[in-house]
Image 1: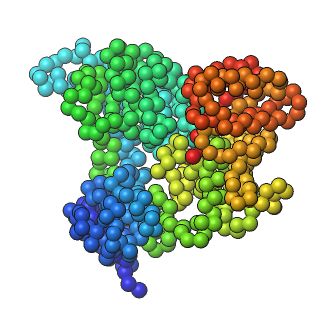
Image 2: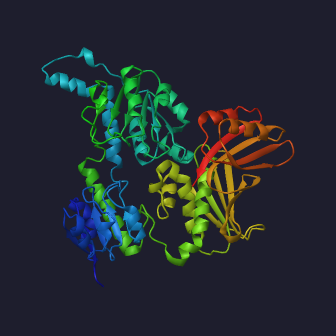
Image 3: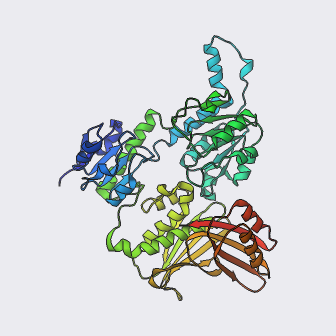
Length: 531
């Protein structure tokens, strides 16, 4: 059998490539600095290519890559790879998300300690020939509260280290199960409660539409006077203008930042002028160990993909293609939207997801499960981070149990999907069906029967079934210039609990949501975008 040929296109730690170099099934060729047509011609002769951030693999790079099956990125980000183009060609794109976990956690603690003990300023003073002890009083971490925004791989490691310093750890992470939180000895709390209780706020969440400027002026105002902020995750999660103002005004004692909205950080950026800020140039993975770890991780992933068809480290879905994809696509789209809806209706940590399917497609459950999890997790992890290959892995790594059940035929629908989320003492259930000619509908929300097209902006209200509620809701939306597409009202019994599913032409502003919530008979207002 011929050997798999693997191109190493950037400088990779050679010891880290041992899973490949030690296996006779692989021929390793190192050619760095390739680009343009030269890179495209080279890729035509390889089964896999491994890159860091230096080599850009574009759509043109793949023009002749009929043989290529795998692109491996020795690191987390895949911004230098055209993932869509690779997916179209059935090429799996793998990354190494875990290799820098310890290094990033240690850097978080390093810049936090440097901040609260004023180490950089004291160092500069000493190098000016001074001996000034009185100007550099700091604080102890012992007995303080560390508030985490995100408690995944890196956040969990930071929590372990913070406890070693005698800190109490509270965290906001809607996708961290209670069992996982207990294992990490983390107290789960709402975002507001974390902000109000933290002596130190540390960010450990990816940058998504939901997390962009999550820590804005309003959030910073909820922090204790004299609190500290640390961000070694992603720039853009913290509003830098608002942070600068809070530091200048003295509401925050200081900040330590390794990541920025614009990188490299402009030379004239205002944060560079502040003495109570520690800045580092995105050094989270800048250790010898992290570089070796990501090399080992991607080498093992590429090996497993080529030898075992194991794509659990892929950031894209290998092409399903052909008739199978065309047949399942409407069901998968419905599953993803049901996952998005279920997530929007759920509070607190999710401990279990169960996907139930009643229909005619014998092979539907695995892709439907992935579709549900893509919809559920994308709002937190980012749409590009969750796909058909890694969705189950990502859910289970966050302590979420994933169940799949093929049920007996549904009495009302030929193709029916049900998603059940559970966590704490609450369960959320949504159901959807494909009607004649493949038209999708949401037909169940908890115990209520509804009939709503899963598209665009959807508002879900829980209320008491009394006269006048529908009119007041319509008036509030009309006064706000919001056009109603569908208004479906369901109830369990007259005068009891009721639910309204309302499709609208645009997402509601916060003041409109608050106005709806102030209607005495309305118990809850949720909105979600189903695209």
